[in-house]
Image 1 (cartoon, helix red, strand yellow):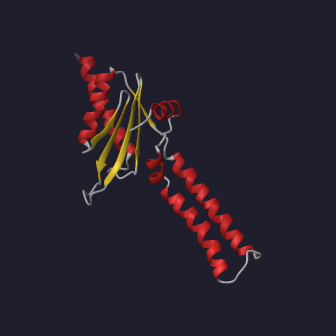
Image 2 (image 1 turned 60 degrees about the vertical axis):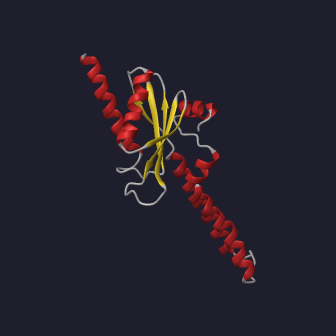
Image 3 (image 1 turned 30 degrees about the horizontal axis):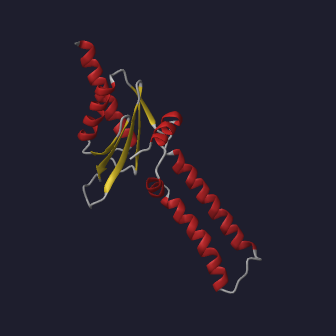
Length: 178
């Protein structure tokens, strides 16, 4: 479930704001890399009766921390939300979003006044885990979307973005023709 503060910040910055659990899952590789470097380096040198007076452990630590920083920046950049402009009523927009989620095999797991969070199964249907978590923020003139975990066929957010855009265009064209 998203808080009002997360929704406001996400809508204003177009960057998905994650809760603690989702943030841990999203950044787990960065956290693990940093922990391995910060724990393994001193442990290795102290257990081998070596001291930190040589340059090697410091270079390893600095390069490892720099790599973790680059990985963090890359993962942070992946939270940018895609914008789908809409000219539909809020009810129609919500209906189209839910229809698109159903078409890709997703299940709505949380919903609020102006957001929907859905989960999709893994592409191969293997295991009990879920493939992606799709965050959709509904606004009057636009829909902001982001898929994390990227296991949707075709690459996560771009796939859902294309499907949602197609469905919105179909409904808009049908409404305009009527």
